[in-house]
Length: 254
Ligand SMILES: NC(=O)c1ccc[n+]([C@@H]2O[C@H](COP(=O)([O-])OP(=O)(O)OC[C@H]3O[C@@H](n4cnc5c(N)ncnc54)[C@H](OP(=O)(O)O)[C@@H]3O)[C@@H](O)[C@H]2O)c1
Image 1 (cartoon, rainbow, N blue to C red):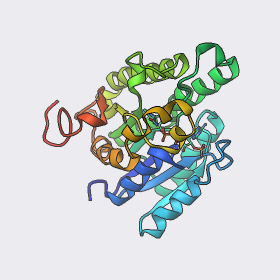
Image 2: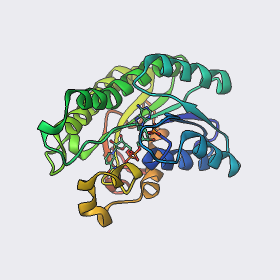
Image 3: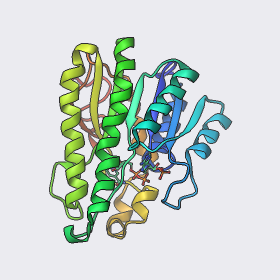
């Protein structure tokens, strides 16, 4: 199996794209750390614990960790717990994110703006800050930051806050990739396209094109390829899922 022997942390893995990636990685042989907040304010039933149980029940290795990625102490505790259990971290998928789309700028209060930036941008900074020394010590690693078309193009429903946060994620990834290439650590942006995720389903604007959206489980397959990258492979790239097998993927030179 492609990811045999690897340990992967996936943030925001209680549902949606993160859950799909966690299940896919476990099927590929990885030991999977499923991160989300146990007391999620979202109201969704699925939690990190239920996802980890699903993985374990299917015969694979996983652990659930209650962690708010915007909280430095909780992130530090999570990394300590993972190292105690598995002793290594090979892959980090920074997927946890908040979406505010289809709302005018004036409706986004300073508190909502700060919360979105804290999760979407500070969360990735904190996760990387704690994980990179571990990957450097091992001499290899792959970091996948979930970005968005909305961080590149002005799109209907994009919204100033969400688009700004994803543009920051993209630039953080490119700059980090350049810095970490000599350490053999890949950093890429994965853009999943419009998803039929739980989070999407409660945003009225998303319902306009609901049927054209993609199931997260269809999208997750190509993130296995990204998990296998190193600083000597594909790094510093924005990779859209719809282009997998066309402009990027196994056997395609970038
Ligand atoms: N849906 C789309 O069409 C689309 C398109 C492009 C990009 N994306 C990006 O893809 C990623 C996943 O989106 P999705 O559609 O799967 O969203 P989702 O269904 O709302 O899931 C979001 C995940 O993030 C977690 N999360 C939120 N705040 C967190 C925090 N402070 N700490 C830890 N975990 C937190 C949630 O867990 P808890 O609430 O249980 O903690 C949940 O597991 C996001 O980065 C999103 O911006 C989505």
